[in-house]
Image 1 (cartoon, rainbow, N blue to C red):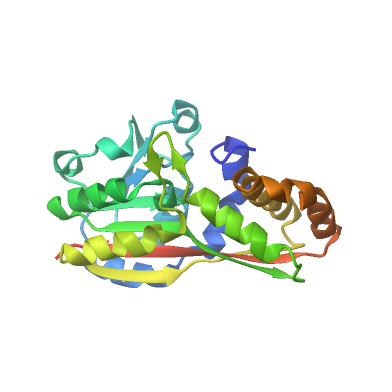
Image 2: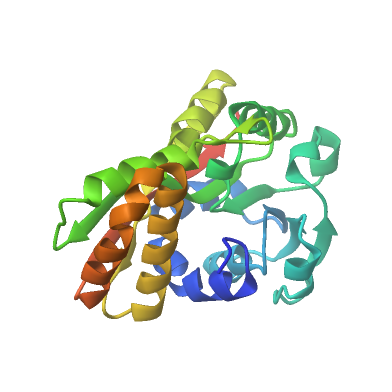
Length: 254
């Protein structure tokens, strides 16, 4: 599965819903108040963020789902939502006029420092709070442990920070970088962990995640390929429990 296939997004949606940090919603709801909301979801895929957040908001709201993949937008299942096909890096403060909240899920680690900085500046200029969730944190805990775990984790994290077509991705440093930018711009920033907890109760997702995690590590470090097959067989022989750490960020402009 690709990182952005409909199948992968559907497979991970229940784990995403369980992981997102509910505690950030308390200051968010206090800031938003009782007014009707317009929420723009960036990199929306098929709309999982909207399906998670909507029942947790007590005020009327409508969604604008923004993605550059027309196939995913066509498959979006969010009643009454508008869709917009565009690259999120081209957003301007004028585009956010009338927007009450900007959201994104599993998004920040795919951006560069320049892109994250510009996005924060745009949101602050538009006085628009943001809730970005499920950014990778660079830490995985596996039970039982294996001697190869640390090498795979290190290679995977390097892969997350690789340079693609001249863009150096932030990977696990995305949330700290964006938090610093927002704080420098005078915003109030909240951060909270949002780990995936995988294991025998989610066998399909656990297997798909493990294969993708190991595959990315081998792509980054070719030497791992020689031992990856045996490592994967050991892990799939199970039972395996994995805690995949993510972090959520809420920023409220002054």
